[in-house]
Amino acid sequence: MDKKELLKYLESLTDEVNKVNLEIWSNPEVSGQEERAANLYRKIFKEKGFKVVDIPGMEHAFYAEYGSGHPVIALLGEYDALPGLSQKVDTKYNPVEEDGPGHACGHNLLGAAPFGAALAIKEYLDRTNTPGTIRYYGCPEEETLVGKVKMVKKGAFEGCDIALSWHPMAVNAAIREAFLAMNTMKFKFYGISAHAAQSPESGRSALDAVELMNVGANYLREHIIDKARVHYTITNAGGAPNIVPAEAESWYYVRAPRRKDVEEITERLYDIARGAALMTGTRVEIEHLGGCYELLPNDVLFELTYKNMQEIEPPTYTEEERKFAKELQDTLDPKMVAAEKIKYLGDSDNDIVIYEGLVDKGDLGKVSVSGSSDSGDVSWIMPMNLFLTASFPLGVPNHSWQATSAAGSSLGTKGMMYAASIFTGMIYDILNDTSIVEKAKEEFNERTKNNKYVSPLQD
Picture (tube, one colour):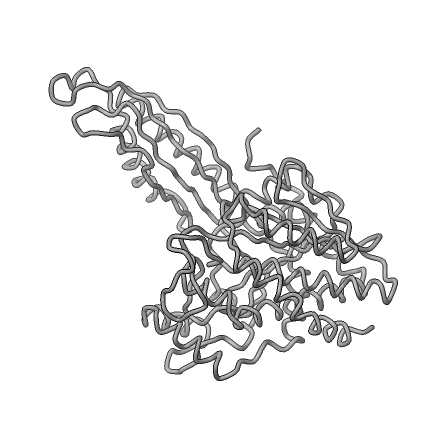
């Protein structure tokens, strides 16, 4: 069974894979509540002859394993949705359920593509008796950035040689560097309540401390690296204005391109919080909620990803699909769409609505993946890749109702199956050339020899 035959077999699985994809899209579950999706994958994998292993203490996390021997290849799947982004497959805002959840980050697609690849590779292993093991990882709670961090801490990925990952976006691209490392924490200030008019001198305002901390954080921004981000909300601002607030709370994210920068900025933010408490005669409790790492590059796997994206043709689209994409695109700010076209196509004087090429590896600086993801943590315990496929029209941002609509449409399906093909092609190459994993591990060891992974989760 050569690579061409294997990819043809994967193509024959399209309806089966898409059935799972649409089942999950139609029944969105937010982070921590992915019972239906996780159990659907468990059930199908067991029926297909995979060994399913649950992750202790994580109800909706598992891996499904097939094959024997090395290399052991991890495929990362996700399936959580986002709150408040329910949407039918429509080019106008039309929620299935008002304020209900929806797959606005395309995790229905993200989980189904490696699922399809796992089924195809099982067939390849059965036909050829090639040594090697495939593991599909069902990873919950990505949107809260803790699922894989917990799984790493629990040792769920032990025994794996490499990990492969992707994400639905609006372009086709192999990604070398991505994600901002992140910490998230809450600052709870405690003061003394008093009548705000009759005896204000007796009060110690926790809200004053929150506001002074925010001022300090704003001044901190001038003295941190350019690509760092500090953002916050006030989650408790006290009650009635005539009562000096005895309790107040803020919630912060600190992001930066490197984990070490996040840690340094976080410590400075902690000092600002303590200073705000000192200035106001209050006390502060800091609750560290978690964090995650940036993607650790691996040039060996990047080149392998890019090679397969060059070899395997991206999808083509019908006139009906182009019309749907154009109508979705037209709901967006034209300036945003034009900026996206310039970024990926070189100019905006065209009527292209969905990306059909491959971003040249020399132009990857144009492609920004500047959010945070718990997938980054996996890349710090073994070699890992990342790629994107065009699953949404140009200009459609993740975490929008337009993305939910596209993720449930044939545009999403085609992006998903293209991703499944890339996975399948990569795994074929890895199974037939043992030096790929060896070289990827050598590079990983060199990159991490003076910078070992430390879990962002506190004990």
